[in-house]
Image (tube, rainbow, N blue to C red):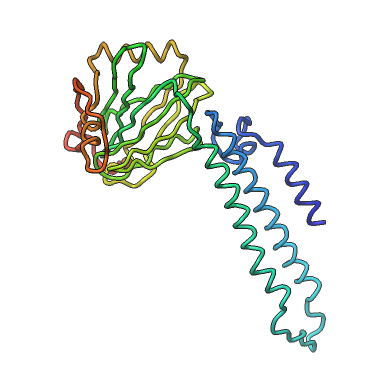
Amino acid sequence: MKLAVAIAAAVVLSGCSPDGDTDLERLALPVGSTDRTQDIWELWLGAWIAVLAVFLLVFGLIVYSMIRYRRRSDDEIPAQIRYNLPIEALYTFAPVIIVAVFFFHTVTSQNNVLERVDNPDHTIEVIGSKWQWAFNYMEEDATGEDVFDSGTPADPAELWLPVDESVRFELKSPDVIHSFWIPEFYFKMDVVPGKINSFDLSPTREGVFTGRCAELCGLYHSRMIFKVHVVSRADYDAHLEELQEAGQVGAPKGGKEANEIAGVKGEDKSGRTGEVQTGAGDYKDGAGD
Ligand SMILES: [Cu+2]
């Protein structure tokens, strides 16, 4: 009976999809938008099925015991049992097996999500600093040189990505730990000073998304929100040319600082200019609103 319910739940849930029209069909995830979202989706769906099966089993046993062993008269004293070895063995081993299965699927999905692309079409250096982001588009054909976009906490930079082309992200921080997160990508990775963290993906859906910092990094952490535009290759190239025309060529200052932190082997590309205003000193808006 319980197995039948669990199987029925699995069948109903498998009608869900990461591209579903409603939050319910996606089990509260946003609409998936990269070539890596399917793996995370399957992990999410599998976890829900496992949780439902465990819930039904445990809750079913509780209700069964309540009814089957209820007190039938005021004079009755229930059987005084101190322990039950098979049940205690089940309590011990079942959670170990559950955790082991979760662990296996987590590691498998993680390996798929972090798999490297041999020759990514684009490389973008992402600099997370207190309290904003800068994006440096490396060696792009459209511009023939590195271009960047950087902002201030009051006027954040925007990230542009070409649809259906592979992108390598290289994450750097000149100050504290941040976390680069675009919810539609089902992915976040820490931005750690003194270390370059990197991942590859191809965006698969055009649109405008919101990216965030997902690691509490100080006073204006909540201001580390940025727009992500996933666009056609032509629009992407046009945006890079706009950056070039605006003189945003080379590397933003925060990026150079990130290279100078002990332990990071950064290439010192000459001719890199530009400036990131990393402090909140120029940030005029009121805090905490
Ligand atoms: Cu941050």
